[in-house]
Image 1 (tube, rainbow, N blue to C red):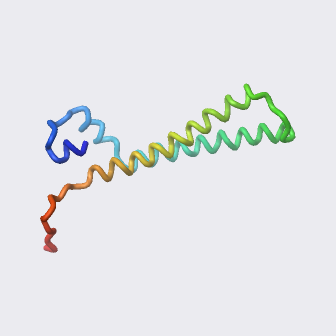
Image 2: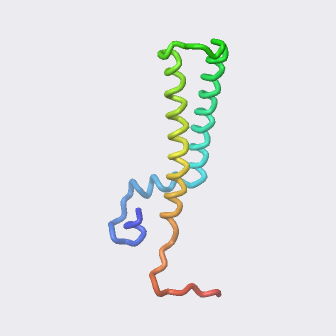
Image 3: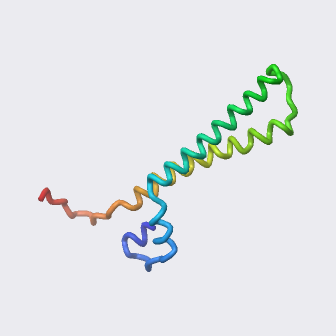
Length: 103
């Protein structure tokens, strides 16, 4: 993407199409949705543990809830950071030595 912004690489139609929809706001929204889902699943796992009086549980049943929840949390954070990174890459490039005018 940085090479395309500097016109070092030829234009990529698929990348341009993807970047039209991959905005900072969309990335934050998708990441927050996954974070909320992961937190909800984690709370559900704690409720299941509470119903067992915080005693031993079947690892098979517990992992069916915990693994997707932690995966959703991790993917949500990654998507949010990736959205910020892509928005930084989209910033305009000013060649070194060129001073911006205050017109």
